[in-house]
Length: 172
Image 1 (cartoon, helix red, strand yellow):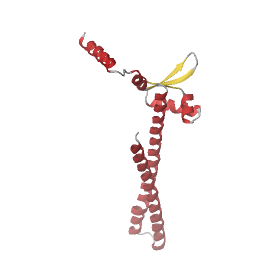
Image 2 (cartoon, one colour):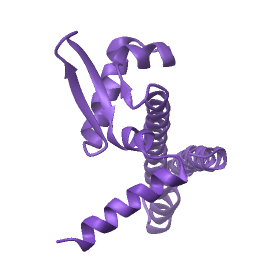
Image 3 (tube, rainbow, N blue to C red):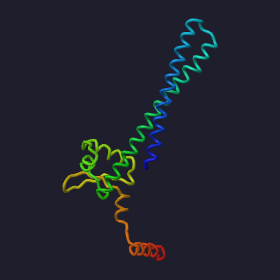
Image 4 (cartoon, rainbow, N blue to C red):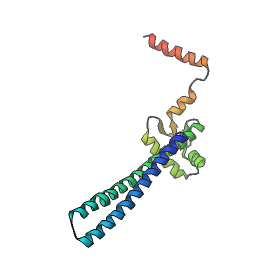
């Protein structure tokens, strides 16, 4: 994610929280005033309508906005975490152990392992759990990063790759 995307998404979350809190305060104040009016004037349709429109509806909207803000905050946290993990994986040549991630991010090894397992479960096409039988160590492979690191870099290498590709398509 680019800085402006992070900033705009964070601002949207803050605005959602602020709207939720404002709606809760407004709904609470209107509910309190409507209940006082119901106590003084007795039950009548206009006061009950005001209670429903300006008290209960903003309270419901405030709770919904507040929960939505929490959900958006969690989604942003996961996106940023995924970005950090992918950067660490790129620096370790597409193979990342929980110990490497924990030391790079200042997390515990258990937390790093949980993050890696969750990301592998979320995107099994790009990230796989592997076990080194010799050392008994668990590591995660990022297929797209491994492929990008193994890609040819010079124009001559690219020409050879293209020639092999087209030959395989032309020759039955």
